[in-house]
Image (cartoon, rainbow, N blue to C red; front, side):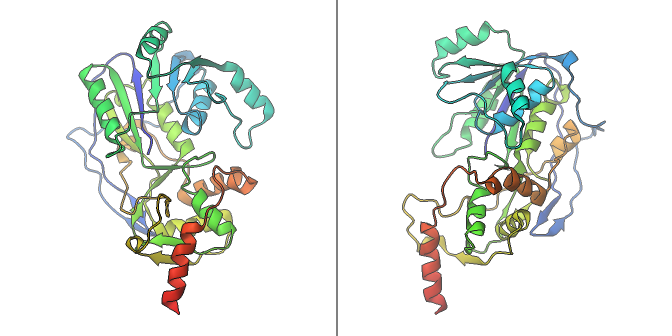
Length: 340
């Protein structure tokens, strides 16, 4: 899970809504009622950002996946965007399906600041001189014992400094250019006509959100007083089980429904290899607060989003990692012995 913190100008009173859930559990809808504080905010649609409210924006990190989509939205809305990177890779890349002219136009409008964010003197002297209105920080420090601890520490630090901030907390992110093999792992096996090995029962509940919907949420907090000093979960509206996800990937990509093999991961020694791309646990969150406070609503349902990812990426023959079925073979080899 990535986290993004937006720091903005002009403090305003905060507003919050207690979250609720409206989701699918492997095809079964779970109904709950929205629980709010005493005053309920009635939204009037999504925030529309125009060139007349143009801002000078710094994006730190996120030039491989999330930031690629976010920076395009920001430029399209007329903002001046500077990307702060170490300069070890191209700062822009052409999106799948994007015309050469559109890519050239976008690239010509992006500014670049090269440096090491750990060089605090450089960061302080360089960034303070640019007069940025908003900073999008897509990289937080990671604690090896708790990979999301840095997000909480960042939020606490910003709160203690009394600056204007908004924290976006995605669950699992998917979509074209995804470097975390969330959907790619399934697509490799579906293309090869192999069974899908899923740990334990396969009814573990998870949740995925499309990168384009995430980028839209980042845009909608920009200059939005209702978002100041607030935290928003961003993902798809529905939950899905691991088994349901395997079937959704097959449906989205036009493959036959896959054979699913369940296994006990404690019976195997996979070494340093990861046999499954998800945590073997329930992992989901309510997005109701973002919907009701920001007026945000995801464009993609799960199958549509997976189809978008497949058609614009894996289906074109592009992916981040080559297929590795070595852990699958261990699992399937033992499964065949047990069946015999």
